[in-house]
Length: 530
Image: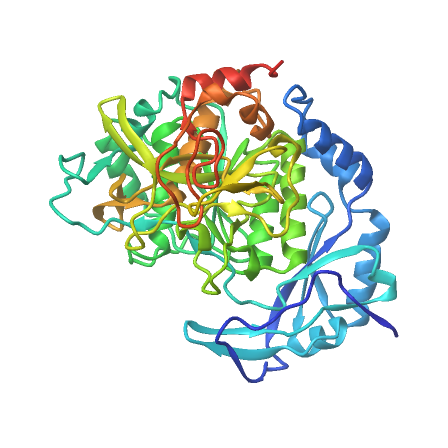
């Protein structure tokens, strides 16, 4: 039977990785198959309308979206037939998410998808992987958009940085060069509107680690929030709430995300979607949150990512398609833009942006250094700790085209001059991220200070939850076009750089449009911009 290479599925080994032999043919694994969407042109038209600031809705319910734009029954049947022919089990099927999860052995998947799975070792660990393209038979070549999970390399990193004391940093704030704030102090400095997010649900995506209820209770009580927010753990692809006990590990990410959102929107429900750190599980966590008819999140916060160069094209397209679905359903997605400046941690000497923040259907959240006295901001600049503690990610995508709301913008380079955006510019907005002006949090029984753009995504998510609640539960949805048409709602950051890109008047590839004036952001989202 003729096999066809799946577009965008080509894989290469991780840098420094070497094959140490074939994967055990009896090893069992699960693979996510993403099917084409019903009526893709109709959805494309809806998304294009949402790219204009004067077009806000109406948003579709999850049920209506699934019925209109989910997978086709005939394609689902085709996958079942294919699975049976290759002795693969269908363990999950979701028409709205367009997802079928198959289970079987390495040997069966090798035969089914024309791959040669091997074991790779690299300086940071090992993984099961492949080289080249996934192959699909003729009957599937038009209906399958992605096959994820054959390769289980870690795909993302959490974007937080622990403060390394250079003096005596106290629990609330101290003088000198280093300060730290509670999320409530930061919200006050950014003029967030009053409110507690009542009736909203904020989804948080986590690819490892866990939270401890006792820590959350103590933390929120220290802020005068009692009882704290309702936190629900949602298992995706066998992922679960698994605290490691290491505050510098993924627990730091989980607790930071929950504590920032929970402080800003204490009456919102927080649904934490736990999944493994693979492209398949990451996508499944996102689509599970988007299509969750139980918790119904109106905002999603993502603080994990990696350079676009680390992803396959099929993965980036699949994630972006999910974010388009979120926009159509009125769900705001906030993602951290990275903590390694204009290189995004890549070592090839080139500029890179972080994904999924680089998706044009995500609010990409960059980082600043915030100096405040009470609720008054005294200074704010690009977060750049000279390579010692990181810097805010930003630049120009190598994959996604310029969205309509960024037409005509320029990326100013530190070396002088600049050029019109050739592709999607990152970030869109920013907020306090420098560990030197970090967030007071509690992790694994310890009070500490953390920064990173990981804090900015949940900060903006909490703001949007407040705004949605204050608007009677009406979801702001895809807010990028309206923010770009409401420049006075952001505090323009004009000082500093993130490596190769410099801050300037207006949008820049360090801090985007700037940090929020929460009340003005709320006003810009209350009605379409004329």
